[in-house]
Length: 233
Length: 296
Image (cartoon, rainbow over all chains, first blue to last red):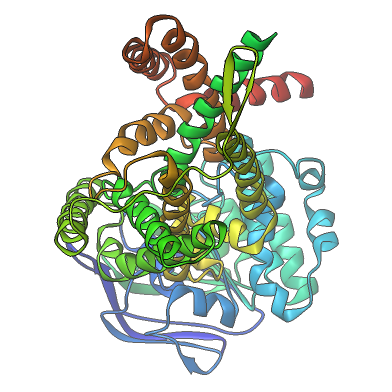
């Protein structure tokens, strides 16, 4: 088991959002998180990377209890994070954004810019351009590339399709799938785009009101109507 | 010819004055977005360190370098104990740094009295035509240029600079990429304080050394940083120092220093009205548009 949470509770100053969340992610899996707006999907991602404190329960990553660990140490341990809204540093160049991803990797000595440029050739031509001037889709790809450069064991993807045109969403789905197949990359993905979810995920958790209400297997995941129910407002 | 040289000299020293006054604030306000009302007192700490060590027999240039480290150490303590609690609360930071400035000013008055013996301006002066030039001010212009280069290098060519820029733009994201953001904040505030101390020490020979001496630099410092904007703080501060000096120098020479200051404030007002995000943001927009045009 690469990642697991037990009885996880977390939230904001206004109150708890997540209640008793138990999820597990095995090495090599692509696991989805489904749910309507406001059910706690982003809260879950932020708690997993360490931007929100764990109020109760535990997070275990690579057999280590990381519940009290700061985000930078969790990143160093091998969790890559692509936040909702992508978190590109707008006034920094594409190159500097990528270099930020390479900070952790400097220690691992497996820096592979060519791999990244293989998947996202446009980045190579735009290294000197400011991150904030890229289109939504390009920013999404830059954010994923930046996370991948750190060579994470687990990639947390929070709605990569948000604000991205359909053709690029497909492209993103394509390389998540091939990275998973070729490099064994493990992914936990929050997504409202049913197509993308069906392309990449092998199973999914459905969240409602901060709790896991269902575990959705691969077959049910391919049942578009069933998945749409979990996303329906 | 001597008149042109003199105008150039006035402009250069004017720009150097604005730049030096703003130096620490460029980092603390421009990058960290903290309205630091203790800026003048940080400069005062630098000036006092330089003056006290100079009169104790330390060579002037060594005492200047020493003031950087004393002010930087003070800044680090200030950040760890107080400023750190006010990130993202701009008004809170304003009030608390104002409080710190009062404590420092009054404390200095209590410990060191109303003034210290001054440092004579090193280097003397020379004249050309009807005009006289101070060698020390020319050195200050040179030092300002070196500081600009040094800051540019630090923020664009070092791992610290990369992490500091990222942290200031999106601290959560930087942390998620492995940056120890609390350390970056402490280092950056300490650097800003150290630079304020350094310029306080550099300007010490040109002013009276007194507990509230820092106040005279606060207004020009804030004007320089705000006019410069935060899109690219170093370029912004350089551009606004030059621009403000270009307004103040000729008008000051023609109509007297008071008119020069009035013209300066008017110019700042107009610039902020037409470029609300400062010169650097407008420059950046201009270059982006040009780059965008070239791509199409």
